[in-house]
Image 1 (tube, rainbow, N blue to C red):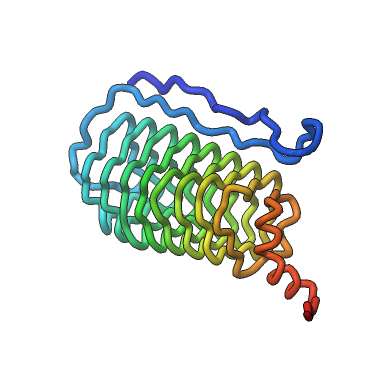
Image 2 (cartoon, one colour):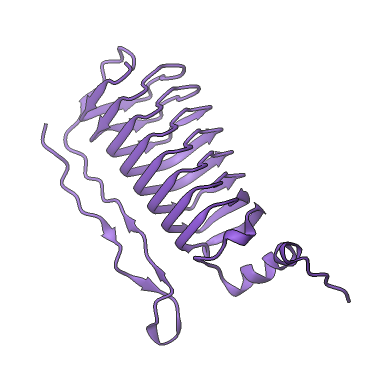
Length: 238
């Protein structure tokens, strides 16, 4: 199967700051160009399976065990992922469109050069995972568990994140563009060149003290003022 021809977009742009002074490095977005795909035969996922150049279309993968599997140059479209185990799986140069499910297990998985479009997911487990050059565009993800994950060159665009958990994670060159972030947990997280200016609303349940290394807008600063005051033990009286 011919390999995917691609190159990462961006990565060198600097945004913000007076007189062109850089304040945050832009994330490098994936550019996935899939080769001609073969239709998946539907025999069911296998642990440590190898899936190369396959088209999973409207496939019911709920409850299946694909732990440790490798997906290379694949398209997953309209697939049901309820309770699917993909722990320690590797998703490389692939596109997931309209996937849906509750309790999908991607703990300690690797996602590299991946696009996730219009997903409807709940309780997805990505703790300890590695995400590099990943675009999550559109859709809604509830209770996303990214504890102790490593995110580098990741873009959340036009999506809704409800109570995402970034506890203990490392985020480097991560952007939030035209998306809603509700009650996020940043406890013990490390942020480097994280651009939060496109998040509206931006709500933090915990970890406001970890915002060093992030960029927010003046309006967001005003919105976060009560949380920041509480963190500092500052009383604000009329």
